[in-house]
Image 1 (cartoon, rainbow over the protein chains, first blue to last red):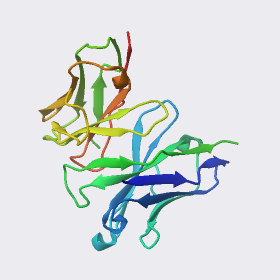
Image 2 (cartoon, rainbow over the protein chains, first blue to last red; image 1 turned 90 degrees about the vertical axis):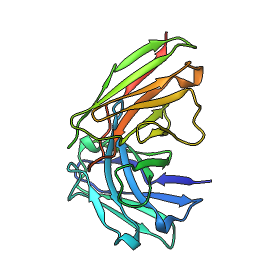
Image 3 (cartoon, rainbow over the protein chains, first blue to last red; image 1 turned 45 degrees about the vertical axis):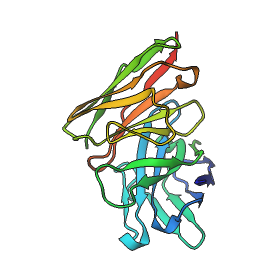
Length: 125
Length: 107
């Protein structure tokens, strides 16, 4: 059974930093393309960024609002995905979900198949 | 970026009703449209991918159709567990944007 478990959420002041983790199990993590999707309180879903598998150079892509502030990384030896968030702003307050992308290669017919339970990040003074 | 819109933003329906939600893309996305269901406090759950392909384990009362810019999600006979918010998402081009959601609640 695929499991994704996020951790590391919490309260942080504007301008601060936080690192989220996502522990993956039940699938071959090293082959997976992994994404972060967020949801502000009472709002819709917003794609944050993606990291491809190492066999695809581990390339990362980011949404415009977070580019230059957020960094996605992975540790395939530990089956872990990370989201390093710097220079946090109040508008970054959201539940952050890690998701798998299927298929794990460039395709217009991809979708977010498995989701974690989410980690709440609150940016407030 | 491709903009996604959904209508209605919310609807009230009864158990057993047939419900249709529409999603429109700001440009043609062929069939590359996915649908997710989200219940309060839970992660989204994939229902339909590539406009009309039913994800494994999803009840057959859910169906999707459309191509180009106009898509729809239909729930044939609404069940109590179907009261939720539904999101469309285009996978045609980067970034892969979501619609604003349609909340289905009990009449």
